[in-house]
Amino acid sequence: MIIREIESKSILSKTGIPIADYVINPYTGCIHSCIFCYARFMKRFTGHQEDWGKFIDVKVNAPDLIPENTLKYEGKYIFLSSVTDPYLPLEREYRLTRRIIEKLIPLKPVLGILTKSDLILRDLDIIKQFENSEIGFSFSTLDENTRKEVEPAASPIEKRINALKEVHESGIQTYVFISPILPYLTDWKDIIEKTGEYADFFSFENLNIAGTVWSSVKRFLEEKHPDLVQEYKEIYSDNVYWEIVEGKRSFPEPPKFSILEVEEEIKEFCRAESLDCRLYFHH
Image (cartoon, rainbow, N blue to C red; front, side):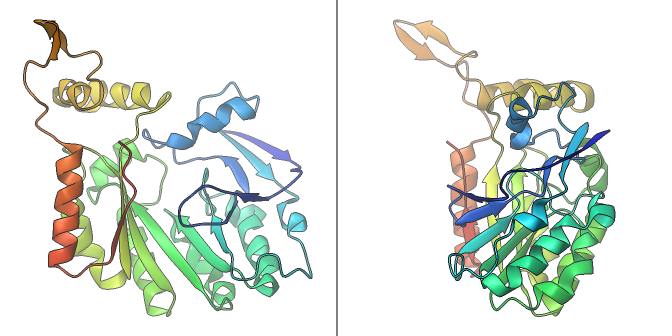
């Protein structure tokens, strides 16, 4: 792991993320090494030659970049984080996220945090000082063996669920982000069943294979689930697996897994169970 301390010119960035007005990323890069990470596109802005998941840039001056004595961010949704996890293991040493949150308190924003780490429990004392806040925990599976395959350096599932429970019982609004839904590997109903008691709402996102994500997912499947390689190709690579018959595209047979059908199934399930759900599917 290559760790580099850097100074950033800014830390609060406007965002097009549907839920947020601004994002803060205390770190560039991530230690989790998730095979499906969309944020790997950040590599081209860093000058790093290492694989995504093998480097971290620590923005050591990040807390000092939070402005003081301004009403600009009052009531605005500030989200940590969009292209990293704000509670990477390095946060134990650098405490950037904690110091950033402390600086945000007098600005009175709506604070949103999404993480895979139970380290967030350390900061509940200051998060409780926000009038409006919500904390989400991300899950792609509840199977620990699968978790080790797809999120090798992330916190174990049990620690995440226990942290979710503790945050919820502290009175802070919580949500579960089921992302990504990996065909044949993510049991989203099981995740809801195991976490529903501690979540105020659920968010869902399907697998996005844009950029270099597909090569990472394909390599993982070839090594761990070779029986699923063709299935994924049929789901995500129809521009390769079709043929021309009588002047028209023709598929040998449609994929067994339909993203559209899963999306509709989630909607129906949440309606039937009276669950608050938000879908962020890529099509």
